[in-house]
Length: 84
Image 1 (spheres, helix red, strand yellow):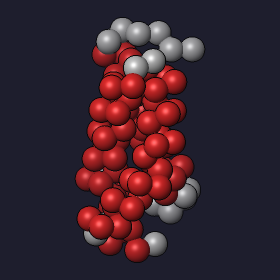
Image 2 (cartoon, rainbow, N blue to C red; image 1 turned 90 degrees about the vertical axis):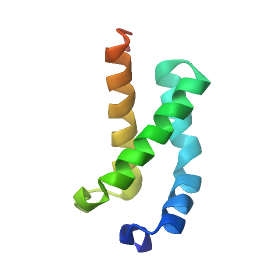
Image 3 (cartoon, rainbow, N blue to C red; image 1 turned 90 degrees about the horizontal axis):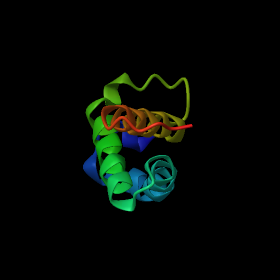
Image 4 (cartoon, helix red, strand yellow; image 1 turned 180 degrees about the horizontal axis):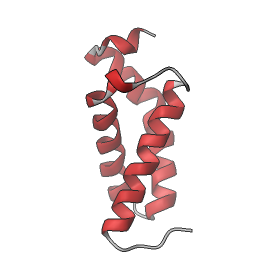
């Protein structure tokens, strides 16, 4: 897991690998491409900043998806949008 060294190049590769699928998931949640893109970037920034908290209890992809979903749920709550 070279990515865990917090190397910018490795992180960019991680974003390229998972970014599209994360954005599509968030787009389904928020219903808007632009908002989903913003939330995707926010989720990956949170992951970058909190990389040291990754505990290896799951895969990195599971970890980023959970961060992304939580980011979207926070956005939905703050905008008083119901999500089923």
